[in-house]
Image (cartoon, rainbow, N blue to C red; front, side, top):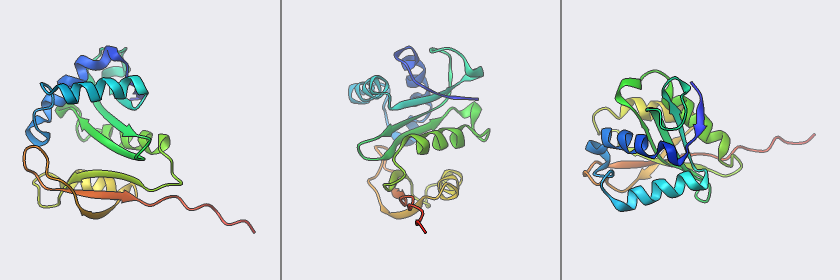
Length: 159
């Protein structure tokens, strides 16, 4: 499995992936704002994906991630149901961390610990060095969230 920069040829499959997670994020697929954001992220080189069998653009997605270089954070990440617990989220997050500026804190918002099923993703983020920092905004579906921060990488001291 390889993380690749998404292309506009992947747009339909991104929307299929978003449809799978609407029950927690809200109705994104039919929202013009989400579609515009997704299209812009692809055009800006801020959308990355893992395609089934490392296929060409337009191949069904195992997972996808949107990053914000300006905010130095992960904006959105999702893994298709049939590809969960297979290391896709780890690959996407590791790729994002390589692309973001490690000399600055890296941020993301995830589900609060009280949300059923949030344990796995929260554990992954903590294993990658993220730490809970406080309450975030509720999702469109009303789920509480929490902001996580990965501290900036310290420069090694010169002796």
